[in-house]
Each structure stands twice: as structure tokens, then as C-alpha cells.
Length: 619
Image (cartoon, rainbow, N blue to C red; front, top):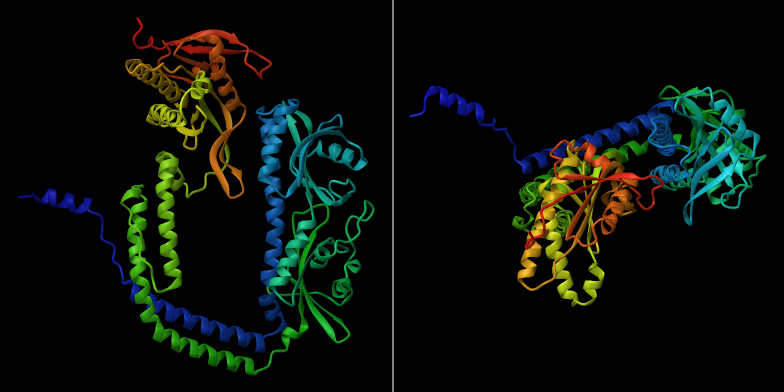
């Protein structure tokens, strides 16, 4: 018989049961309530539109358009400022030497990929030398140049006394590759406490007009625009339909040059009236029998000229007939009555497949995809499509289990399916089968595939046992890494232990192959630790979690160096001095080979060889 203390402990350990309510009844009440609230809200809006003031009407009709335009500007400019700040920190910290052209090109190319709205990223040195990358319809290209204009020289001199990013004026670029107006974001760079130059990001302004044309098309009767100061037009739907003639002396059109007479008369029509919120101003511009209500808002923090976003609304929207309110009320009441009658029946039909979906989705978290069951169809198209989408997803998940390690899938699930790119300190491993190509030419394709599958299965178990991530299989090669996406402070030790396990497993496998009369496999392994960029990298719509950087290339070079160090050994494992230095575990089986020349490196690096057991069958 359980004691009182044990009973109390059991009650504390058991989770409290949460009170729940039926979905069908909830949906019925919520649907009817939402329709009722919507009807009341629509009636209230109509009442305010017919009985309210011009101030109230304009605040309701123009707010969305102004917010959309302002958000678009932020989407284009704010990430560029963040990117330049990141590049400045990389150079200031010493991670990138501004005099190392190849490293600088790689850093700028990666940054350019993260900000597609930027046309050019460059570093202008104090001596006037410019090195950067540019992207266009034919891809991304690195370039070197010299400062040619007084404007660029002034930007460099002015940057010496600043420590933040500053937007420069809009100007026209006459080069055939651009021929458009651009704005530069400049940020000074310090290296070793000295001024190292100015980072610049060049953004074209054409796409802003294209976006405004889309907003105007989706909101008939409204015309959004962006002004550069009070006398120049930065973006307007008319500029997307017909590009204005621009030049270095005339980088942006005047208000009277784009074919919008109401905008041309904006500042000449009376005093502005504050509407709805602070900073939102309204002006009524009348030309003959027609008129527009023009609402504007100044966007702060853009230098040297403030940006003004605005939207034009026809004055006719104020002339609403009184019977609109009555028609809206009757329509709302009819919809409400129908919704209340249908809500209960619909909610019950919805609840059943939703409950089945919830049960199956709950099982997805266990990653036991084989136990999941397909969902049946439904009378409702959305629920039927949900079932079809789930069944399609289920098929994909089962294939995903084959192609992607479960450990990586769990990490992606914990992060919400998005792993942002970041610089990480990792240890990279490359493996390769010696003379595989020559051996494969003498074997049928099926035998080659079977041999590779068995070999990769052997290596994969060793890597995953140490928490590593297999990046890819390249022919007969394997690339794996430790230290990303999750932090692994002991990534070097994990990689060395995996290498030892692979060496032992290959030795045992070769013993079995000799017993079957087959030639043993000879394997080279390279290990290197260094900083890389880790994240989802690939094309639009198709990417994979991987790592890129010089550390990856050096790991591959170490694997290839194995052919020169021990061309006849069955397994040769080479590790860089960086990996050995980071390792905190046993180093007794690591023998230094001294500084070695590595292809692609101007300086020698220290190499260590892992002294494994002798091959099976040998003393």
C-alpha cells in the first residue's frame, strides 16, 4: 500500500491536465462572432466614412499605402547598412586583411549574395585604389579600379572622421553596364588602429518605381510616390512605365517632368494639415474639375537629402452617398444570419479532419516517418488540399530520411527550419579512396555502386557517432564537419576520434576483403580547423546546409597531400597544426611531420600524421 508521501510525490510528478473545449462548438461560436464583429466594424467604418471628417477618412485610406512604400525603402536600405557594419568589423578585427585581394574578394562576394539589391560592393583605399565586386545579368565579377571623380575623393576624406555609415547623394552612372541613378552607402574602415579606406555599397533606384507601380495597380485610384527632397522624384509609377532621360547633371527628374500634374503642383496648393498621426500631412490639389488629396510623410535618418513618401487619393472618395450605409447594413445582417445557420454544420465537418491531422502531425516530431499514415480526403477543398499536401509531405519526409541525416533534421526542426548563415570555427574532414577511378573502370557499375554504398555506410557511422555532419558525397570522397550548426567546443577532438574510428574500421574491412579474395581499399583522410561561413547556401528555391571558406579548401589539400606522405599505406590521416592545437584529448598517436608545403598556400603549415594500427594481416 502506497504511503502518503509517495502519493503526494506521484501527484506532483503528474502534469496538470489542461482543460479543453470542443473544436466544433468553438468554431461555430467563433465564426458567428467574427462575422458579427466584421459586420459591426464594416458598418462603423461606413458611418465614419460618410459622417466623419476629411481627416478621419484620409487617415484610413492612405495609411496602408504609405506604410507599404516606407517598408519597401527599409527593406532595400537597412540590410545594406547592416552588411557594411559586418564587413567593417571583419576587417577591423583582423579576420580579413584588406591587402589580401583574394580574401577580400571572397568576403565581398559573400556579402553581395546576401544583399541582391546592391549592384557594387567595394573598398576604396586611402591611396585611391578601389577593389570590389559587381553583379549584373551575367553574374558576379571582381574588379580593381582607381578613383576618378572629385566626389569620390571627398567621400574618402570626409569618412576619416566618422565611425558610422552615411548615405551619399544620388548621382547618375553613365557606364554602359549601368546607365542609371544610384546612391552610395559609405562606411570608414579601421585596421590595426589606422584608417584603411572606405567600404561602399552602390544601390540603383529603378526598382523602387517598379514596386510603386505594383502598389498602384493593386489599389486603383491611388498613386504612391517617393520624393528626394522637395524638388526631385526618386520613384513614381510613371517612371516605371517610361524611364525618364537622366544624365550626370540631371540624376533625378523634377516634379514637373514625370507627367503627374497634381504632383507638380503639390507645394503650390495651400498649407498642409496634419492627419491621423504625427508626421502625416494632407494637401488638397485641384486642377479644374478634378482634384487629389495628397498625403506625405518625411522619412528620418536618410542623408544628405530627406526622403518623402506620399500617396495621391481622388477627392471623389469623399462623396459617398448616404444609402451606402443602409446597403452595407442589410448585407451585413444577411451574411450574419447565414453564417450563424451554417457555422455549426461547417465546424463539425472541419473538426474531424483537423483532429486526424493533429494526431498525425504530432507523430512527425518523433521523426519515425515509417509509422505515419496518409490522411483521407475531405468534402471541403481546403481540407482536401491539406490532406493531399500532408500526404505529399509524408512521401517527401520518407525520402528525406534517406538523403538527410536525422541529426541535421532535428537541428533544423529546433531552429524552425531556418539556419542563418554565420561565421563558425569548425573542423573539416575530407576522405578519398586511392586509385578509385582506375579500379572502377574494371568493375561493372552495379558493383561500383555496391562497394561505394558499403564504404560510405562504414565511414558515415564513424562520423555520426562523434556528432559530425556529413556535408556531401563527391564521387568516392566524403566531406564532413564538426562545430556547426550546433556549437561543439570539442569539435577537433571529435574529428580526431572519428578519424581513428575510420582507420580501424577500414583496417577491419580490408581484412574481410582479403578473405573474399578482393583487393584492399586505400583511404586518405585530411583534417583542418578554421573559420568558415556556415548556413543554407545554394540557388533560389534549392539550397543545402553547408560550409564555405578557406578552411574547407585546406582540409581538401591535406587529404591530397596524403599521396605524397605515405603513397603505399592503406590508411593515411593528416591533420593540420590548427586541429592538433585545438584538441584537448590524447595526442600520443599524433606525429609531427614538420612544416609542409601545401598546394595553393604561399607559406608552409605544420602537418601531423595519425599513427594508426598496422593493416590487418600485417605485423
